Amino acid sequence: MLLALDTTTEILHLALIRGDRVWARRVLPGAGRGHSERLIPTLDELMAEAGAGPRDLSGVAACLGPGGFTSLRIGVATAEGLGLTGLPTWGFSAFALRAEALRQGQPGAAGPVWILLDGQRGEAFHQRWAGEGPRSPAAKHPLATLPERVGGEPWWAPEAFAPKVEALLPAGRLALADEGAATLAGLAALARRVAQGPPEAPLAPFYLRETDAEVNFPHAAAHLPEALRKGVAR
Image (cartoon, rainbow, N blue to C red; front, side):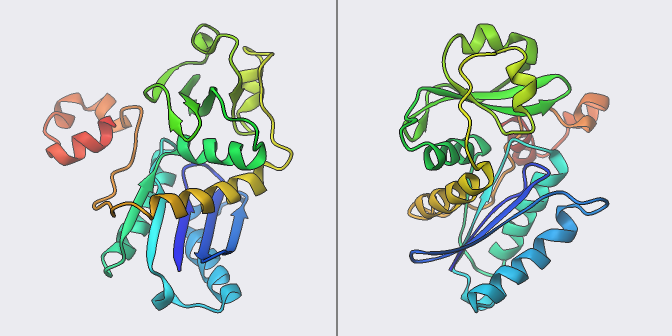
């Protein structure tokens, strides 16, 4: 049984996959309750629904970002912790997950399409996709520059972020009738696909911006271990 998880935003997505069967859950944010409090109880609920236990897990596929520093670390740490028990682990980007969600929700939307994610601080994370793969490197730029970068091509952004984008790009938005269902379907489909490849260990969070520590303490950041610097710079 494969576990797939996404903790890169304030919404938690989990799926258990056994053959053609999927048990999935999308948990919206609650007051004072973060992913650290909700992930394991939600996983326990899914396990109970599936009539399974921890020993039935065969691997873990986790979304590595970009996203919120704390939230995505929780997902990666959970996957890494399960990996320490001997389970294989795989990672995928938030762009790949949202591109797969778009394919699940709009089967005819083959692209090209821009996947736009909230970078906070007046910025957007963006990547151009077509078919099942990216057509440009993932990048971070000010929201105000999106019109010149996206041009007239179609774009997709999560519901919570889309209004900010639409104020700058009034045309070209692709909308999903049920974003939650499409994201969970995308999570299961993508997890199945990446699990066909070789496992990845360790899983490195995919950041598109410097951490606050790097910004505020640049001299200390220069002395980070090489593996950690690579993870931060991805």
